[in-house]
Image (cartoon, rainbow, N blue to C red; front, side, top):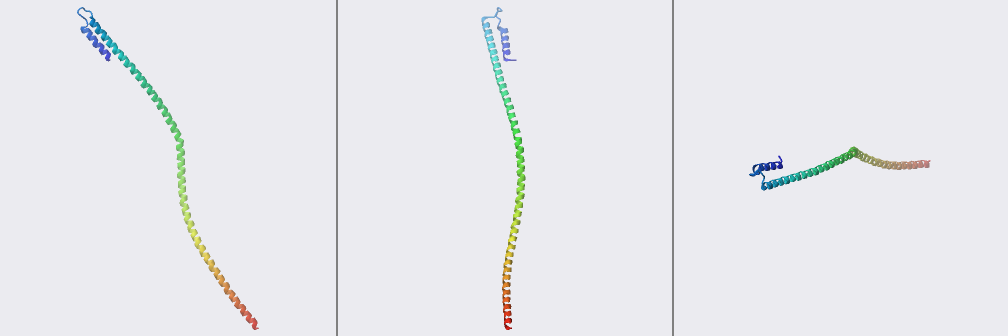
Length: 172
């Protein structure tokens, strides 16, 4: 039961108990009480209406705010969807590039190991080449010496033979 209805009931009971005078008529005091009661009731009704009106205003403002919030939520959801759609192609491209980088890293690692192996082999081959080249140069030098020595000995023998031939030719 509302506050106004309870007040009315209370006022009505008070009227019924003592508002009728000895003559059966309302006294001026009773009329004033009734006017005060009516005034109080109308004031209460006016306040109740004012409260109801303000309540409706607040409700309208809240609904308006909720509408704005819902609209903002829809706009943000739309923006979020656009961002997700925008990110998808980039993610795929990034993933593809990362895979290519991983493959390139594997290749670089394998080629680096191959390079180191080949470089080691090259150094060993170069060292062997230099060793053999030194050996060959030494042998060439030895051969040159031997040939020079052989030539010298042959020349000496030839000279001896020439002397022997001259001496034999002179003897005859």
